[in-house]
Image (cartoon, rainbow, N blue to C red):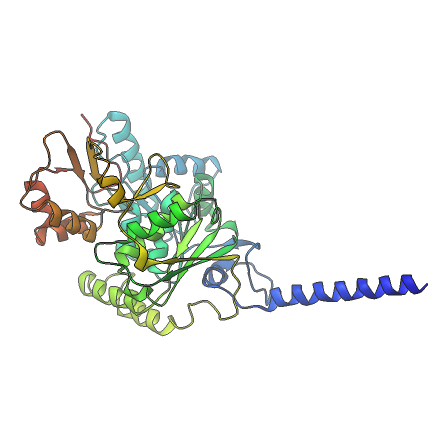
Length: 414
């Protein structure tokens, strides 16, 4: 009887500890990822506070599809849908195969444009730029919102404090038809960036080194939140590159905080787009400033793990060979005397203005080696116009670089 009583006491004690642990989880604050999902979740029970692991119905601010817009449209029509739920939610861009002038590709592009026109969907033709860059330049992905796309590099939006994550084509079609989809909130990893970047080290070096240092699937299928006292010194271009390549690291999103550096970026952006822009204007900027204090992680929020890297220890890094799980410092590779046949300054990872200017500074007044093909493509027509106005684009052309249309696909069609 005594032993039974002791066992019962132990059981009650363990159960009470589990109850306290569960209660603590339920009562804890939210990280930035959870807060954004909370704002875009629909049909939640009254008082429900969402956390990692929860399945939620979400209504994204926007959904983008690119060259796969026609396959999405076929799935949409296959659902029996004839009218999109909200044409202001949907964006179509053409960016992946813009040099392909075959009848088959041109027919697909025409189908996408006609579908967008029929339903009043915002459409950006081939040559305007990479879809993710357009989503940021045109304010569809905006700090604090949830924007998805049928492309793996939707993580890019995290660079401007928007929760961006990829969806499959079937989910994109469902959003076109209903305005909603579902998501299980993933575990969230905190990545602490300590110290300051040395001169000549860029955002690309940060993410390449992270992929190489933490190469045992530490962030696989996680959401990532970048933190650190020195983040405010990282230019938005660098943040976009880091967030973009969290895809290659295995993460579902890569989110930077909304800080004064980002707000200043939007202030300058407003000067360019003008007050009449539908998404970036005085009203949206004022709201961003007033809301910025609330759009951040709570002090008692929970993270599944914390990874730390000291930026001051980094040098330029190169991925590979053949895997982002391998990264080598440039100083090592320069001693290996590796032959280069082709080089590309393209893609949503590294073809923004800062990348183009950095390359131009290196090749200015020089010539690309005769046996090297160096292809360049700006992230958007706007980025190319800026590079042209600042002389960087001409420096690259004078050096012998081969220009491609603003877009995602690096292949030169013959």
